[in-house]
Length: 256
Ligand code: CO8
Figure 1: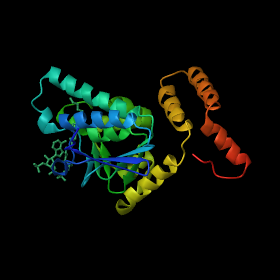
Figure 2: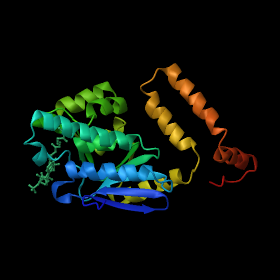
Figure 3: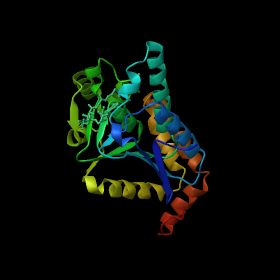
Figure 4: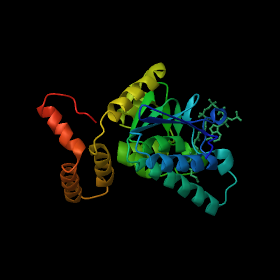
């Protein structure tokens, strides 16, 4: 598929996807979701990529769903638009490889929801976050009501969504929505440093950890612990795990 909205690059086992509609602050439209779904399914089938970075071109990460496209929708069309977005963000969240959001600017509404569907968020100090749907008479529609409370807690989710306030990257860091703040000019470098660190570990522990934490949050503590023990045990059958422990005993770096 030829991408018109996404810019994709793959190097050193790290894939980067950049949303590129800077004239409308990377507003998320149907074409974006079609391309993103195709890109993610394609990437999931590859075994030469170990980390995905998601970012935006220009002064926004993404300023939300495309309001121009959304404004004329009937309720059934809006339901469909919401479900398509939720499905694509679920695909992103469930990728076997870790996904890092490099939040370069505005992450509002659907843009904040996109960042939340990634595993970690590094942000430029100039980035802004928020769920301003209330200002349009709407609720979030790409599972923001579900993810924000899981990431930042109930009070912060209710506060941000009910006030529609836009918050600074520093406040986003304070409520755990962001893991690290970077100078705007070093954001890409810092994200790539983290991505390279993760990509250098070729063991099956990475997808296992991601699955355990992501699925475990909806399970009881005991159910999650049983899953953990099973995944832990399964890794003992893998060559990469044997190499990891052997390398430690031999006081050298593992060869992955
Ligand atoms: N959709 C469409 N176009 C947009 C959007 C958007 N979300 N955001 C910005 N644009 C366009 C503007 O219309 C403008 O276009 P033009 O130059 O043709 O007038 C261009 O981008 C530049 O924007 P501004 O001139 O407004 O730039 P500023 O720097 O002055 O302001 C802001 C930046 C503060 C980010 C401002 O653009 C803004 O408030 N944008 C809207 C933010 C917003 O409300 N986002 C939430 C959208 S709703 C949503 O995401 C719901 C998700 C679930 C959907 C479920 C489906 C049913």
